[in-house]
Length: 266
Ligand SMILES: Nc1ncnc2c1ncn2[C@@H]1O[C@H](COP(=O)(O)OP(=O)(O)OP(=O)(O)O)[C@@H](O)[C@H]1O
Image (cartoon, rainbow, N blue to C red; front, top):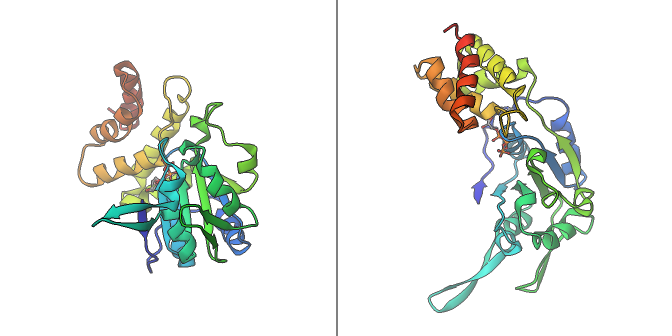
C-alpha cells in the first residue's frame, strides 16, 4: 500500500482521447471507474495524474490472490497488550475523501466484493463489521479499479454485478506519435530514438499471442530509452529492457533481437 499525498507538480500524462474528461465527470457525479487495459499502458500513471490534478490523496493497492476485505478495510492489531484498530487503505481513502485505486482488482479474494459493492453503488457506504462503524463516503471519495483483460480466465473474470457498478474506460497501447511523445517526456531521449523504439514495439506487438504471453509495454520502452539516454548501446539496452523481460525462451529472444538489430542497422 502506498500513500501519494497531493502535490503541486502533477505527474506527466499524455492523454489518448477523452479519458480525462470521463474521469472528471465520473468524479463529479460520484461514480466509480473501472479501467481495463494491458500491463504498462498508463493506467496507474493516469490515476496518479488525475488525483494530483483534483488535489486528492491517492491510496493505491496492488491486488493479489491473498488480498482480503480486511486488508482493504483494516484490522485490530495487538501491541503492548492492547488491541488497536488500524484503518486499511480503503477506509483511509473514504475517511479522507480521496481516491482508492485497486490495481488488478480481479486478483483479490471474493470477500472483497462485500465491501466494494455498497461503496460502488449509490449507497456509497463502507460497513466496518469489526468496529460496528458504517462510514458514509464524502462526495470527493472515488473508487477506481483496473484489470488486464488479457490475463483473464473464466474463473477470474469480473462478475456482471460488479462490472455494472462502474463507469468503464478501455486503455490500449498508444498510437505511434503519442507513444514517442511519452518516451521523450519520460526519459528525455532524442525523438529519433523514440521513433525507433516505438517501431520495434510495433513489430514485437504483432508477435503477441504467437510466441509471447504479453505484448511489449510502454513501460519497457521507457526503460530502454532511459538506458540509452544514459549512454548504453541501444541494442544491449533493448535486449535488457525489452527482449529479456518478454521471454525466457532463447530462440524467441533471438528472433526478437533480429528485429532490434535491424532497427539499429546492425
Ligand atoms: N499516457 C502516458 N503518459 C505518460 N507516461 C506513460 C503513459 N503511458 C505509459 N506511460 C509510462 O509507462 C509506465 C507504465 O505505466 P503504468 O504504470 O501507468 O502502467 P499500468 O497500465 O498501470 O500497468 P500495470 O497494469 O502493470 O500496473 C509509466 O511509468 C510511464 O513511464
